[in-house]
Length: 439
Image (tube, rainbow, N blue to C red; front, side, top):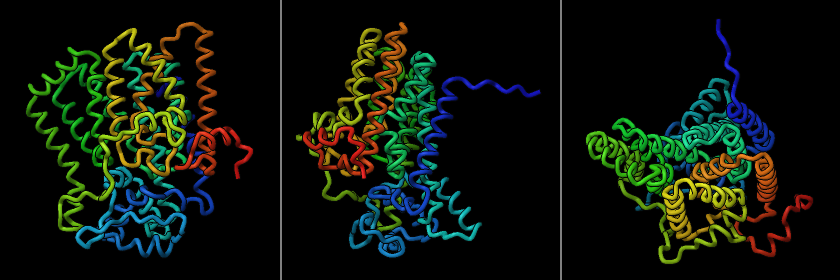
């Protein structure tokens, strides 16, 4: 006789979030012609590798003229993701996202062909399945985050609240709903998994775990190279100087596994180089051309606090998590508090040194979405440290209000009331919570 296990609070929470996310996304984007707005800007370039390889067999992306300038032409959505290299067209963007999206694309392609649909790679079912892929990645990322929170000793109720706060109180929700084709939600899963496995490695170092981490790091970089910075989170994840050095010593003692991990990491990253070679005859291309980092002119305060695109202004729940979580960590493990802050400052320096530190058409500081698990750890640890009922209720009330604020500002951003590039102090307060003015 099979006995069904009663789901725990976190499992119920994740299930409920999955239902809500699927309902909202399907209601907003899967009906009518709204699905055509899902693939915008960078997302078009990430995705284009899939129809290029599986449908058009064209790594110079000539089908852009047929699809984007022809069949699905929309002047408001037209985006040229190709550049010229030695007279040959090449995709500006990296192919890691296409690898992550491939199972969902192939499922849509198979169903579309089997049912006699329009198997051009851009009809409705392809976009819907891509959106489903983003939801799946977000939920899996939150599931892995729960495991990470459990490893940090966060009690179940605090874990459930933390998952809800991360899903609906941060810009993760925006990138699930409005921009699922961007890399951030997908990378959120892989970065969170890297954090979780790294945390486990420093508690029980093994050669096998090194190999897995090497492959995962390569894939993270194949999606977005700058996210290779996640390797610098190891001191925080180790939790102490002794654990850090022990883990590094074990890596050297398992040198064969470390070598295999490095080689596999390089091989995964080299997928992009092979595609460049097939398309242009050259392995090495800097496809971002005139876009660079301004190392001597970072905008660290702007990327965190400005009205234009401040992370803590538009997602204040992360500021609360940072302040409260670091306070608790400093009391119980100063090494963790210091190394968390050091890693945060490091990625903030890199992100804010990019020439477009506001990252164009986006909501809040979009490059931080991948690292939301680190904020989730702080929030979970902070909530878990609250023992008395009254302070816990107060904390939950504040989180609830901040979730509502994030949802309101997400809606305002969808309707361009909060502009993606032109926000100022005056404009921000003029439209603050003015949902009655949406049109």
